[in-house]
Amino acid sequence: MLRKQSIFWVLIVAAFVSSACDAGSPAEHENRSNSQAHTTASTKRFYEIDDELAKALSRNDKEAAIRLANEYLTLADSYKGNWNYGNAIHDANQALGIVALRENDLEKAGQYLAKAGKTPGSPQLNSFGPDLTLADGLLKKGQKDVVLAYLRSISRFWDPGENNQCLPGLMTRIERGEQPKLNRFLLLNECHDFAHQ
Image 1 (cartoon, helix red, strand yellow):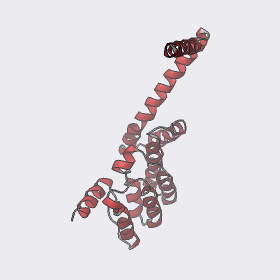
Image 2: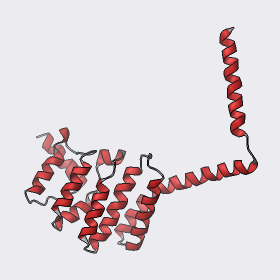
Image 3: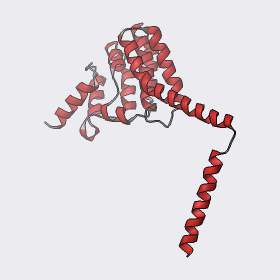
Image 4: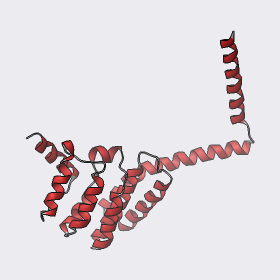
């Protein structure tokens, strides 16, 4: 009997909560619907903009790359808990850095690389690693210190080798004055092969 009464009260409370959620004027319902539609459109944009940014960089469209990178960073402010947040921080700053590097503004490019390295990571960055195009370009221009700082930053969430030995080894080579090719896919292969020798 007591169990039936408990179920009865749970159903009453559920009905009350449901009716309270449905309460409100038609305008309030419309505002909620518009807000959900906006959130959905905004979220969709947050997921799609990275591809547009990559295309703008590949066709060397400076204005579009800057505009899209800044839009990506602005969107990221609203999605700090989202899985894509770390991608946005890294990729937008890297894109701005690549634009600066193409204009031979090494100081600005280095600043953007440092900002890219402050990403908290993401499922993609943690697994496959970040695109190292800007770091590689800066290393070729002799910007060893900023590249080393960046590699230390990303080692918080990514090391392509086993037992976290790949990036420290790479940093040692750079400290010695070497300029290895910085490419995440090459690193993944090299570190995997090294670990299994």
